[in-house]
Length: 123
Figure 1 (spheres, rainbow, N blue to C red):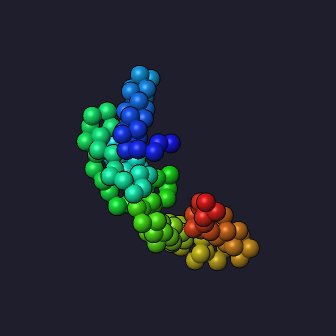
Figure 2 (cartoon, helix red, strand yellow):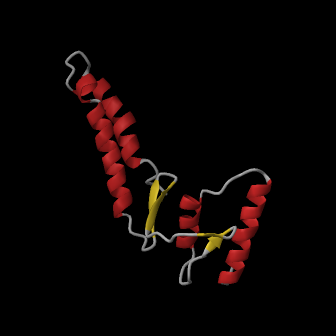
Figure 3 (cartoon, rainbow, N blue to C red):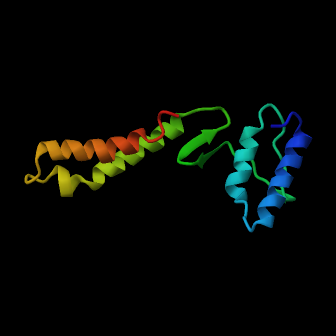
């Protein structure tokens, strides 16, 4: 936690140095975006380890789409798309099969399709 932009930059630089010491690389494409969005009501951080950062309006982090204006419509659309894709992949192998009981189809629907639709919704 920091109260000034300079302190945030200092903490970010310390993090980058510590990560480098242990052989970890920062993904500036992802990490830089996360840092930029987390800085509210201030100019975003310009660099991590002296590497310039790009500011983005939204990005995907841990399966969720985050945006500067806290709009969740992109995240909801991504979840609906994932559920739709899961449903579509099962069309010929499950839904159109007459050899599989309806109760089995419902169980697969709840397990595969609803899980991909509702993943992370409680957060």
